[in-house]
Image 1 (cartoon, one colour):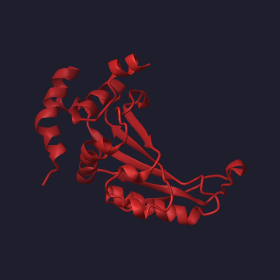
Image 2 (cartoon, helix red, strand yellow):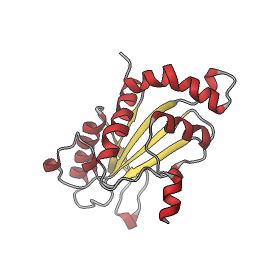
Image 3 (spheres, one colour):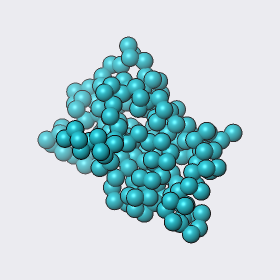
Length: 189
């Protein structure tokens, strides 16, 4: 059984995006390839091993998939990091798990954020990918607040098949990504 957001994309959004973007072929319409979730525990120098274990546990609760431990590629003395040392956790979501995660992120997690005004538009990388970070795990309903031992930040990268930011913005906006309203942002500034 396909996730609800994936069904919506296939049945309705592909046609809408094709018409809006002026794509001649349905295969040109941008789609979501994967979602990468990263967590880095660099500021816990003295208790890095325990912090990495906590990051692995938190990422697995949030995504429903066991993450891989990330190791430092080279030593950096200023950050007290040695080559080969554990520094975080990373997971790549694809398929049904990706669509379910995106649905929960859009409809449950983002509305839980205190004073949430939308996600920034500036986080596109020029190649059709969108990255956004959150400073702690308390915004996710899967995480039990009384079980949090240390604050762990997360980065989400939404990788699309689009070659341009405009196509990726149209795709994510059509999927329901809660972007900041540009007019409101300009008036507030």
